[in-house]
Image (cartoon, rainbow over all chains, first blue to last red; front, side):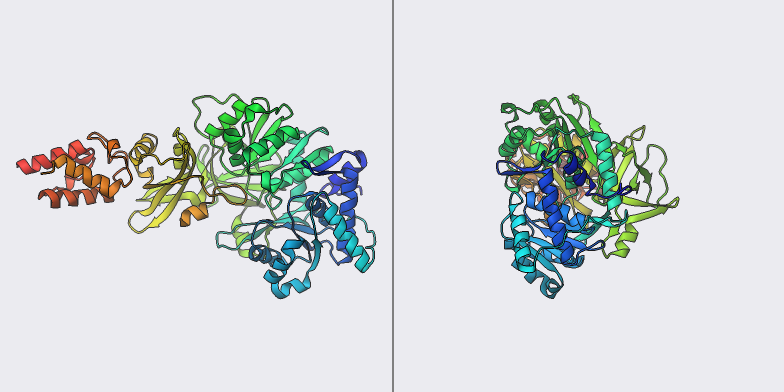
Length: 522
Length: 83
């Protein structure tokens, strides 16, 4: 295939030819698979799925724990030319059934315990879907076993070639929670996925001896870097099992023991490691790059982390699922003691274009605050089956489609962007504009505050009531007088929270971000 | 009889600072400039002062200058009662 620079699964095929015996994916302490074996296993799934009628233009779901089996499943689906739809393995069957029914997957690869709940959640829609059921998972043996059973039952699936999807064909759909309560499917094309992977390769220069982490679940967009960038270099990917993902000391031992060299996760995980991982007792000399994305990294925790890990390079990556990463900023150590403001989200990635616009879509004057809009190959095709929401997500300008991130930024000079907050986290209180993120940044300056999330509750009198949710260092409540006094030293008085609630730890979503929806309701 | 200052302190703690350590609230703790009392809370405080001490607080007095600390509030109440 001479063209096809946009085909996402080409990196695996090339690595299998170049470094067939090198470990491609490892489950710590359990199992690993070479590039040759991973290529062969995903070929087998491709052949079976094609025999079941799957092809370019289709979607195939997967509901599996994070294992070598699920990596091989993703790659096998890509080889058919279909798009993969990963669902949260810990989510209820009603939600996953809704997602897989919404995008009408032709087939689904599912772990045995989830198969019957999924069928009943789908109802009659399940009849149109072909199920590949894994009786066990781990090491790839569960997928191989399922394929063996299918061969015995239906005869061997004829070997076919890898599909050659067009650049605009979808590579995957990631469902994100919609503001209306129904998850919505973000459609990413082969071109979008490959443009992102190519940018990562240019920016982070993966090496063949690298060991990458896979911390984020596969239904989260951080997984795209984890899954495909190591393949370009023929490097190894280490899967962080779900049960260790949020256990600080176990996680720290895994990073040290597996000699992870490139780490990528949400900041909250790194903050947890910095505080509770007992990092000083372990050897992290292999670590050379630390990437984080998904939310603001409070400087207080980043400073603690950098003290324990002074040698790697740190990058703040920014971007919604709809664009994947679209800006980046290297955090250069040391972090000055006086710094309390979070680091900027940085420059727009070289292969993308960004503008800062006002409410009418016009460019703001230099240095002004506005919404970041992004155009270029990374950008999603749209939301599955939601033409109206898709149309609202884009701004037409200069013959291009610009994705509206919903995030307010300021150009600090030279194209380095500072994140101000969510467009929808800007509230009005007694006529004043209040940015909830700015209040959070203030609360993080308080020496006793570990976690801070601020929500606005509708209030007939004031417009909104601002409530600060806090987890403190000693797990104790703080004096309301002292807290309000502290806030009033850093914020205009109308921004001082009306009330505070104390938690042992703030509730998190499955992607390790603060669960604002729950805080809003509670 | 309870002192003026104690009555003001007790009202503020009960109404606006449940669970607060009373020792944190001193006579010079700033109440309005810190947002401990917002405008609605200030109105409630004024209503309390008028009812409890039998005084009238003018609209221009219901502000940070006259009500920012317990000491300020006490001074305002005393001036009204002396009049």
